[in-house]
Every structure is written in C-alpha cells, then in structure tokens.
Image (cartoon, helix red, strand yellow):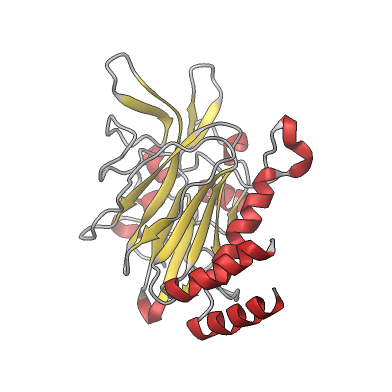
Length: 295
C-alpha cells in the first residue's frame, strides 16, 4: 500500500475510531451475478438495504450494522424479472417480487450467514448455517480483529450440490442440481427438524443427511443442535468488520488483467484498511505522527 493511502487512512481513523459502527462487506467470487439479501431478527429495525445485485468479482460497499443487531445474509441465484415485471430467483428467492426482500426470508434451500452483534458476554456471534439447505459455498471472515480459537474464518467451501441425494435435490429445468435441501426441509419430520419429542440436544441427533452436509462443510451448522463445532465468537467492538464471500476460492481475474489479480489486490486493500481503522484512537495519533515524520 502506498504512503499517501496509508497517511489518509491514519488521519481518517483518528476521526472515525470508537464511533464507527461494525461493518459487513459482501464479496461475490462466483463467475456469475448473485443477489445478496438480508433478514433482520424479530423486533429489530431492518438494515436500509434488504437486497441488491452483485456482479461477478464485485464487492459491496461496507454495510453499517447497528448495535445489538441480529439477522442473516444469503445470496440468490439466476434472478430476473418475469413478463409482469415481478422479480424472482431460481434459488433462495424471498418471493417479495422485488430485488429487495423487505422483511421476507429465503425460500430453502439457502446457505445462510447468521450474526448476533453485542451478544452475551460482549461477544459477536456468527455462523454459517445449512439447516435450511445449501445453494452456494460461503465463508465469513473477521477482518481487523485479533484471531483466537473462537474468532476465526468460518469456511463452507465444499460443493454440497455435487453429492446431494435425489430426495433432497433442487434441480433446474435441464436437470442440474442447483440446491440441496436439508432433511428437515425435504421431509418435515420431527427427528430431522428437532421438534416435538426431538426438541432437545439430547434427543435430536445428526441424521445421515446431516452427516453428509457436515462432511462437506465441517464448520457449518448441519442441523439445529450442531452448536459445538459451528458457533463462533469475537469480542464485540464498534469497529469490528466481517467479510462474507460467496463462492470462496481462487480469485477471479478478467482475461485482460489476469496477471494483475485485481480482485485479490482489492481484497488486500479492504483488509488492510479495516485493520488500520480498528486501531484505538491513541494508536492512531502515534502512528500518524510517526508516518508524517518519515514522509
């Protein structure tokens, strides 16, 4: 990163630190357009934008997260407006008829990224959930937050669709599997949904279907009580940043600029900026003075 950009970030941080809200950025690493969406938990004001289009290789502007917010993110695929102008998607549609979901949740199967900010013991809780099934690989990564055994990237990079059993598969018109339902969604039985006589962790165990999901994405929730290996936490903070990436893996580069890896370079700038802007105020003043002296 060049000196002018660093200098700008240091001085900007002296004004932003300790007052900037937590941020979530969504990146599309898929080779096609997706339509991310959000749903806020009950009794909490929704985020200003509940759905948007994101081109292949693009990243959203950072989304400001209010204190104590909880909710979920997911991505819709193969979306378009029909003859009447109503907007619909092949997977994870929210059936709002528009790009924005406006309080509607995803129709399964859908890979979900879930958050609770400023939760118990001053922690941010986050996870990847396949309890409603799978439509896209996804990761969620803390940025600019000290890593620990519980504060770390959550990766669901496996292609669950590839080995999805026919009874769970959502197929497109050509017969290609585009989503994989969970056993709960597919069969709606108490033993799969952890309801009725199976409504406790002791009585609801992972089914063979859930085991397949877990093998594909070991850090993700595969059924309702899959807590021990699937819940992650970071210390809450007003400057926390999280990066959600759909279709994680090798960066996408356009043929004309394949050698420059533009997506990777942009990610590096985003992560560096997030890390810098998460420093405490007194650190900013010290580093800004030192940098100005050396420049």
